[in-house]
Amino acid sequence: MKEQEFLNSIEDLSGKIAIVTGGAKGIGLETTVYLASKGATVYVAARKSEGTDVGIEEARRRVRAATTKTSDDAGKSDGDEKIKHHDLDLSSMKTAWQSAQAFKKLEQKLDVLICNAGVSMTTLQKLSPDGYETMFAVNHLGHFAFVAALLDIIKNTADTTQDGRIIFTISDAYKQAKKLDYEKLKTSKPEDGKTLKDIGDAWMRYADSKLAIVYSTIELSNRLRNADIANIYLNACHPGNAINTTLGTGHQTAVNPTMERAVRGFLNLLIGNSTQDSAKTQVYLAGNKSIKEKGVHGENWEPEFSMFGSTYKGCAWKEYTQLGRDEEERKKLWNVTVDALRKAVGEEEIQSVETLKKLLNAGSE
Image (cartoon, rainbow, N blue to C red; front, side, top):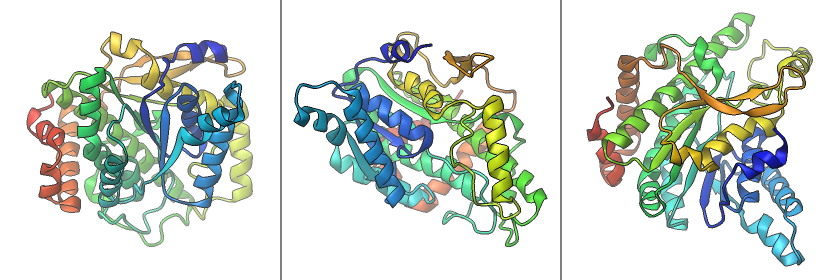
């Protein structure tokens, strides 16, 4: 699929407000550029850092360059005004919830929420403020709290537009996961990351965190529809093999950095695809009109690439694994997650979000 063909498949997003978590690096950066180039105002939700600032400036520059305008002022507006930073720390459910509350004071609407941020290959040396393993905390718990707190503003927007979008970035790694062991996810290991065996254990915990996102996608989507909220299209996607990002680097001391770069380089040549192509599936779920027209809810979408050259051909629905569809395991995670949210922010805060209250009572069948 040629680049212009892909761009033409995305609707004009002018006037829409979007959030991209982790939108200043890697796949998230490309997603930010795509959405802003199609007219959306994009909030890059990430922790304040030099890297975040650099990424936002790069996104603005690229949007300005991609937009043909007759005046420099208009071009500046397209880049600088359409891409904004919003502070978000996903390591804690409380800080993620507070970030969402702060966003609602900035904007009256939210059309698109892409939960793209993530961490990989972290160790068990220290648990999150909520008492869980870091990847599970950031990739699942933090995003759950952020989405939950934003449900009212997303629903109110969708009531007007009849088209709200929430996208979770998963990974095919979830297919390697086993049933979630919550006791293990809550047990620290002070020496973790120092042996080669720890690398394999870290990868499996990453797979666990992505399985948790699969469960969240299905559960939240089912509960939205059971609460008669069918105009929010919540789906998940695997981005592809964007091996040349920095995701997962530097955490395992047993990994030789030079060897890691060599292996990543080889794998990138063999099976890798660009971060730009990796962003396309979540952008498609966020901005293609067929998602609404066909009533796509709770699905997993994956990219398709050519055999040679890894050229992006498009994306399509892919069935979840048997474990991914396991209703009992999904409900178990829901209960664990809601309990963790209650402990993190308190019942009064949860009751203040009307849509979340509906989902808690809606059921998931």
